[in-house]
Length: 581
Image 1 (cartoon, rainbow, N blue to C red):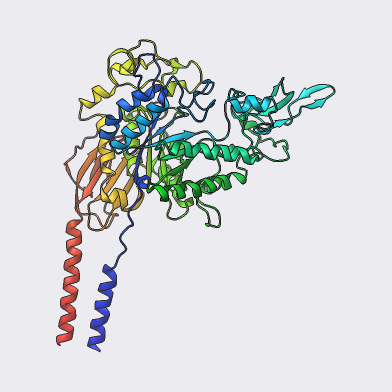
Image 2: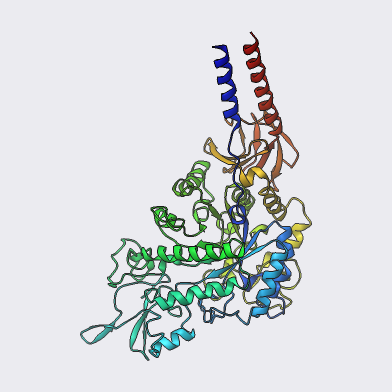
């Protein structure tokens, strides 16, 4: 009987120590992405417009800052009605930005610096100045139905659009072409006619284009506005939504112009092809999807409902843009994060996006005093972080720069230093005006100040490479309604605990509900205006946080692992005693 008890104890000890080690992550699953708007990043030739050689000249800067991958907004030729999102040639580079040779040099130099390069791919539409559209207008047999054409609806001799569909930018989604004497569909501006994906030749052409750029060395694609790819085959009027004003996009419920099921099949097919290419070339090519859709619809971009087909490696997650607000509390923040993670299918990668070329900058949207806090958050969450250029120095929108588009204020030139045009260009005239505060808020100034947003950003990107943050478990909870706590831990390694005080008043928190923490922890990173600094020791029962503070603590779990080994040794001694009695 004693022998049986001893064997049972030994078996339980063996099973307790037989814990699965996390699988190695692929590069994208823990990467720090950086979005570059080419027109605004760095001008190399003094014409006031950013370009590819300018980006290449700053790759060392990005590598030093801990960036793993850059995503380039469209660098293709464009009439610039939507600044690159109206493409007139999918197989070339906008001459304002450089040449195909410049692009190849950028990709090669990025790879030399350990940085992946992703392209913004615009599958839904082209420019109306694209050769395909010109040929379609002329009813060239090959291109006749490359776009979506419909005859006018005539009422008492008056010409009307085929139905009531509204453009994302407002007004009818149909424009009459006098030459062809038909309406064409454009879900965005009239300069961006929608491609017809019910024509197999369109899908074939766009697929070939992906492989053209893969052969230039790119590491993946962001699929822009992907959920607009298909429309209702019967072209039925869309119902009223009960919101917005007549003619505005929100006025209709868009059940016939986006989120049509066919789009998922296209994404799954592209994923299959890219996986085959990845295997053949021994490098992982990824797809990211942009779709303003329901959470259920968005999750289908990860994989099919029956789990038999894989789609995007990650859909863009915009919830922090919408939910991280100046009056957000810890409870709301946790709910926002849980909302995505709870819907996400198992064994997939979340993405966390704090800003983009389509949204107001963090410092303007939430407040300059919250930028560092959001930097802490996106770099501690599991998965991929995506940062918009300039957020590493807390750049602000510049409303007076608005010239072409209401999004211009958040697309102003990068602020490198306090020289002419913020070091973006040697030209005093730039395509958009530089923010007038550039002399005080720029990279050079912040790199000279260890307690700056730039250094905080770099500290956080370096922290993401720690085993616990890269591969470890994720646990988060609120401490009251003010403080959000996020724990990353990995057995046998340091654990890291991020604390964000979401309130505009100081708070003292007790962290002993996290049962595995040591009684004292060390500050690993503190945002620039925190009362703490790296290396400070804190007692977890009494952590003092300033208003809108964020810090990251770490504890040496090596001692915990040693304690576990000692416990196992103690059990083994007990077993031996049982056997010897």
